[in-house]
Amino acid sequence: MAVVTVSVLLLAATALGVALWSAVRVKILQQRLSNQEMTVLSLRGALSALCASEITVDQQQAEMAQRLQMLAGQQEQMLLRDPDQGPYQHAIRLAVRGASREQLMETCGLTRGEADLLLFINQTPEDSGLS
Picture 1 (cartoon, one colour):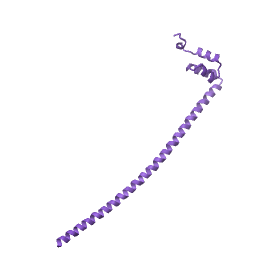
Picture 2: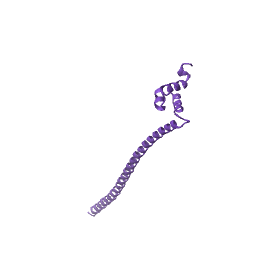
Picture 3: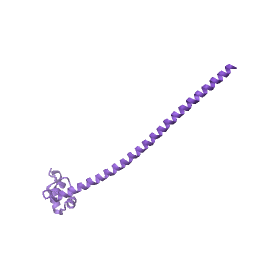
Picture 4: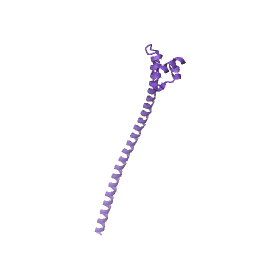
């Protein structure tokens, strides 16, 4: 009977030890889970901030592209106003690049005859059929 009592007490002590070990292990796992949840929340916040920054950068990039277009247009206008680089010099550059009569007339304010003359003077031998 004493052996049974000792065996029961050992079994009870073992069960109590396993229960205490399990409780400690559950507490540790709960703490790790809490830490992981905090990390996930922190990462979500960082991701939201990153997305907001990306949207801002995209908007700034679009604004810069518009400003660049505006500056290019202003530069073209300045070239047209410069007496040394006036509309004829600009028209010659456009004609060499292959602009049409209508483009020369519209962009540089040339008459039809002026545009035709510039195109004739600046045509390549391939264009004239003299090659």
